[in-house]
Length: 122
Length: 108
Image (cartoon, rainbow over all chains, first blue to last red):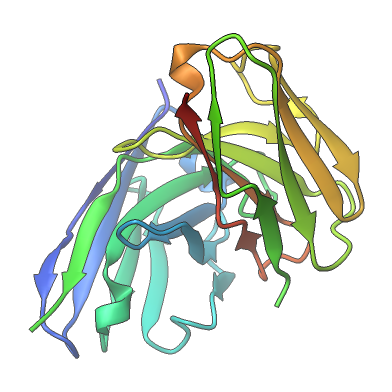
C-alpha cells in the first residue's frame, strides 16, 4: 500500500524555523516528483514546492521562495521541507503528496499524507 | 497569476440528485485540469485528471468535462459520502500551479 506520513509540525514564533518530514512507502520513491501543498485554517489549497526524483530540480511558490527549502533522501524514502523566517501567514496544514506519474513534474497529486499542522504565532 | 474560479461557492443538494460544479481558468490550460475531493478533516483525494480521466477507484458517477478555460465536474446521483469540498487545479503552467477556491456540497 502506498503511504505518506508527515511529521515535524508544531508551534513556532514568527521568524523561527521548522523542518517537516514525509516518509514514503509502497512505491519506487526515487522515480517520482514529490510535492508539498498547504491549507490555511478554513481556506483552500496552495501548492508550496516540488522536487524531482533525483533531487536536482526544485520548484517553489513565490510566497515561500527564499525562505523554504525542499530536499529528499532517496535512501530513506523521505522528503523534507525546511521552513525558515516563518510568518503568521504560513500557518497551515502541510500535506506531502506524490506525483501521479513517474518522471513527470506537474504537481498532479494522486496520494496525499494526512498532513501536519504548522502554527506560527507569538 | 493563473487564476481558477469555481462556482458556486456552496451548493445545497439532496442525496440522489445530479449536480454540476464549474471551474473557469483565467488563461488557457489545455487539458491539464484536475478535480480533488476533500472531506472535512481529511486530506484531499484526486478524483479526475486530464479533464475527464477518473483516478483509480473513483466511481463512474463522477464525470469531468470541458476544454480550454471552462470545465465542469458532474456527479450523477449524489451519495452521502459525496458531501465534501471540491477543488479544481490547473497544472498546465507548472510550476505556476493554482487551485480554485473550492465548492462546498451541503446536504439540503
